[in-house]
Amino acid sequence: MSHWIQKELQLPEFPRGFHLITGHVLRAIPELSGCTTGLLHVFIRHTSASLTLQENADPDVCRDLAMAFDRLAPESWPWVHTIEGADDMPAHVKAALTGSSLSIPVSRGQLCTGTWQGICLCEHRNHGGRRQLVLTLHGEFREEP
Image 1 (cartoon, rainbow, N blue to C red):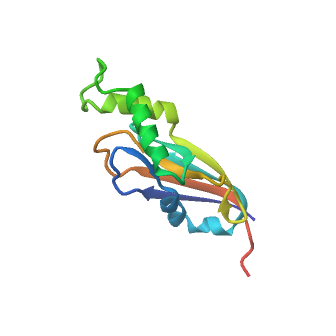
Image 2 (cartoon, rainbow, N blue to C red):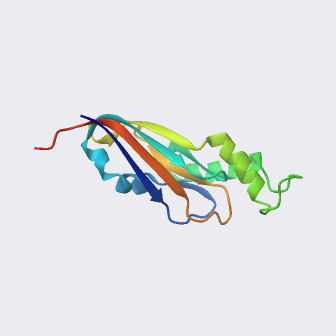
Image 3 (tube, helix red, strand yellow):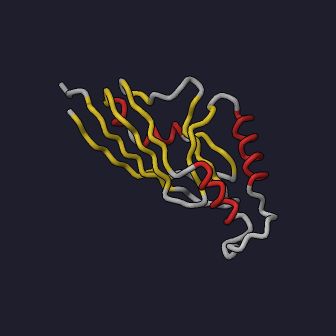
């Protein structure tokens, strides 16, 4: 039987950088375990943070990504939009590069991510606060006995 499930998830505050949040997402939507075939859409409600599907085994990947993004959009550039602080406009540029949502297939109660993939919060601000996600699961669910 096909169903739609939507949940909101408020993440804890993370420091600037790339952070694996797959566990947070899975805990927030336990109904996923009953989904035989479907799609999980994860959307972030912010313009200075973003989401990406990334390496989940070696934390050096997250550190290297943060370093690369800081070089792509440095705070030292002569930004026009500075009213919210020196890290704000670079954060918008970084978020534009990665995006605000992910769509991940679901099969037999599990995300169909690759062996080394995880959902990653890209926190582009020094003090971004608690970020909010909208999780939308659509799929076929096994019948309850």
